[in-house]
Image (cartoon, rainbow, N blue to C red):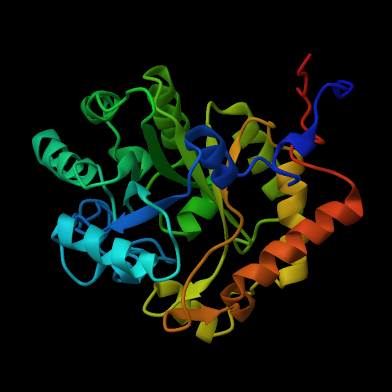
Length: 322
């Protein structure tokens, strides 16, 4: 392991021990920016019978849609509803159009362009975020997404990596192997599209070593961001059936915090942390219930880093910022 650079100062991350996406946005745009979640009405090859009709075991019938999508597929109405809902408690005036539900590259490129164009035309939008699967990101779609690159405009593709272990991807019923993720991330990076990879910690059958292997793999890939999820059970998901039969253990908040900090210590310092844990409301969450208390989870993570005296990249083997 290389000696860590003395010039590396984690205190530059607004006092946090990790490189937080929200702070990055504030420093870049000098204002509060919020995501407006969108359900474009698209499907998923893992649901429509192309790969499977069952979907991933952790996904519910709404395809991870936010409650603020207001039950309509009209993009402008969804964004207006979300903006007005946020305005009750937040003064943000700039937004990221976030295609969140299902697979948001699963359509003809002409259809996708219309959807994306509609979203970025919404008043105050300063960025576009597109959630998708690694096996639904062909070169034509990458070219389309890359066409939205411009100065002072935030562009991201979120890819469900989840884990590097193929046996776990089979358990999750993802319908693709890890090599598809490596390929998609690499091709997106070649087109200068920032990729945020989703990672699940606590997949049954994965040991601590397995999860740290995923951390090292993540650090080796050309990703720019990561969203962490603890494995949680959503009402209506296939995982709920397994959980109710006692077949799927859940991590405690202490176990998750410890594993997450271990993982973050092994990441490159430049990778932006978009989220530290899964986030669902009381109406949809079955377990673990500690996931309802977002503030407590964040404080527990910060306290653990403080106890250790470590930070993001502390154990990254290629840390060299001289």
